[in-house]
Length: 109
Image (cartoon, rainbow, N blue to C red):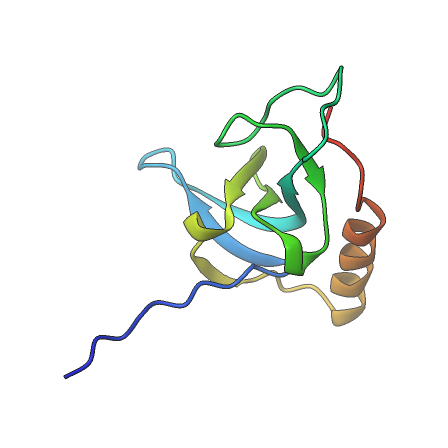
């Protein structure tokens, strides 16, 4: 019998996941995609789970996602287990996706 590999994919805008340990476990919704910055930025600070400089990117380049919930959070793509999707209209999801795309190339300061 062959084992089944778990295939992870980059979460889309509006998809949800949980993070934290009980009793501090909370739900989050994906709001943008990020990757490590290859350039040095004088004022940019190191952020995220790997404490590195990050830049907003397109979904197919993403190493990280940023998400909203009780607070903002950045997580590695491979650490996110999708639990669902927000109950927004497709129009609102598309507007949120467009907002994320407008951020592409901006550095997290």
